[in-house]
Length: 77
Image 1: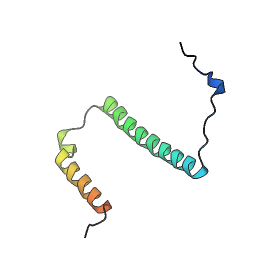
Image 2: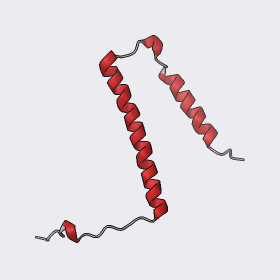
Image 3: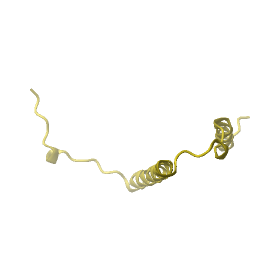
Image 4: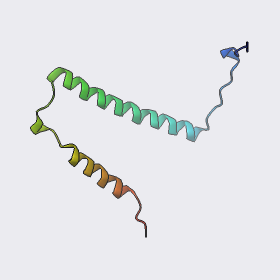
């Protein structure tokens, strides 16, 4: 049986400051997205599902998202 190293003996590799800042920024964006999603779910739990008239069809959402992606992508000559 192999012996597992003691967790106190494991040395963690430190990130350089720019990489650490990038990881923190990603964590903040992820946290903000999760908080927004949780808010939507809490609203649904409290008030129920919105009426169909209040909702945006998925096809419209898809086209909007694809247009946003196309604007972000550089044009190929």
